[in-house]
Length: 46
Image (cartoon, rainbow, N blue to C red):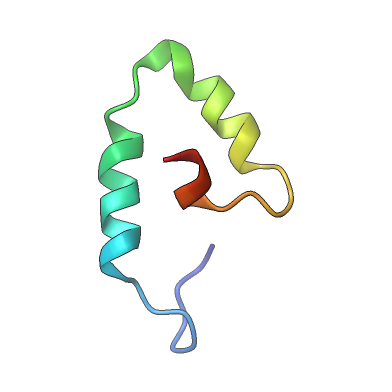
């Protein structure tokens, strides 16, 4: 999601981004599909 003054970047966001960037290439399509579903939060996947 986009960052706004109502939704600033948090430490959890940075942590999730670091974990997601460490996922092997062959898993990225699966994670991307999950993240594009409604009501799926990043911390659910991570």
